[in-house]
Length: 529
Image 1: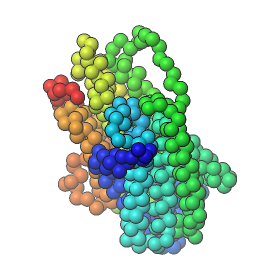
Image 2: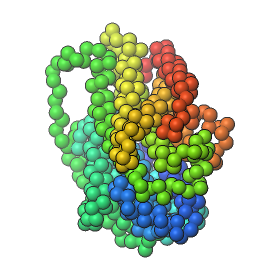
Image 3: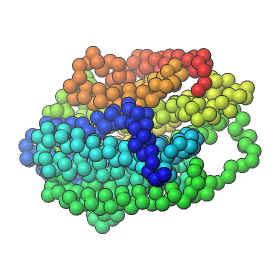
Image 4: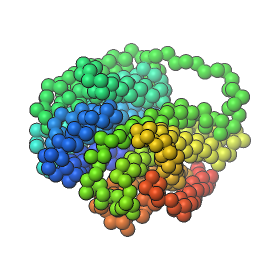
């Protein structure tokens, strides 16, 4: 039997299991650059406007750190500048998590051992997931290039941008394959992979801000930007990325061949023989399970808030004082507001969607604990289902509150410092906390699905993506307001712009509580998997 026997069947199984996630992720990633290109063309209609935007972006070190350099003052060049970092994150992180999900998670849950009892080669599972993820990135690149060309951008630059982002997805899929072999815990594998991504991002950011091009070339995220899409493309850089993918995949296969099934190449650290006194309740256990994620996300949002506030400096005002921005301000009912204030509140609203993702991730931990059998062990004790679920739910909602406080405090401090008015800190903090009922409502949707329709619990991510797209296109005036009423974030007042309305926040809190209560009632009545 070959080491690749069964690869095709396993690949089809992966596609079937992720038949919802793959299309949603692919569509979002494919249309994102084209939407940015259309917005850029509308915001900067003349060559003078484009050069002004490029100069302002280059002068703003915070934007250079987060997005990279501008190589060409054109619609295509500004599009590549805007989407390179975010697109690499979207394709890279999702690709990495998919590889870990279908490799290390399968081993940790015991399903890989069951599959291995059939006619399945040693390297078939790893090959299957790499083939699916790499093919998915390639399909996304084709759709992305087609959308960019349809938006009126040159074909050469469109293909270069699409392939560079797909190469980022391939690279971090290979990183995920390596981390999945190093540790026997899926959580540790994800943590190592995310740490590698952050390290590469920081290396690229420091190199670009400091003008040290050699340092930027030490990061594959620097390579993706330096394909120079729409600016005399460097196609040979893609070969560097491809070589790195092959090298990392080879390391992953080598590690896979040398370790035991369900074990990691790195030795596991044994835990204590007896539980600590602090683990005597369901809430204490939930804190133990969620604390790393909670602290990491909170710290990340604090740093993100500082970057957000620092990005709003004097140079950016020239970029956002455009008729289209003024129309967006009028659309939210604050026609006399300052464009910079609008920009701050708008970025807070976008980052609040990520806080909502944190709540969904934490709430769906209920389903993970259930399907992997750990909930059975806990529920065999006098702990009730509701007490067990409430422990995870409390960590979800308090984690979201902590993240928004960190985001608002960081953004408010940096914004106040850059404008010389630290009195803006409580205003920006209040604006961030105003999104708390909305993110709780998104968490309530996840709890509702996990409690009533557990097999459809992953649909919470699909709802999250659809709501984001509706919110973004609604802000651009491309979606009817009667459709937008279903989105919790639409009802949040823009506090930085002077809007203070309590009633919508009370209503959203009530909706979130009702969704959570119905989900808990369903969990109490149904069978445990």
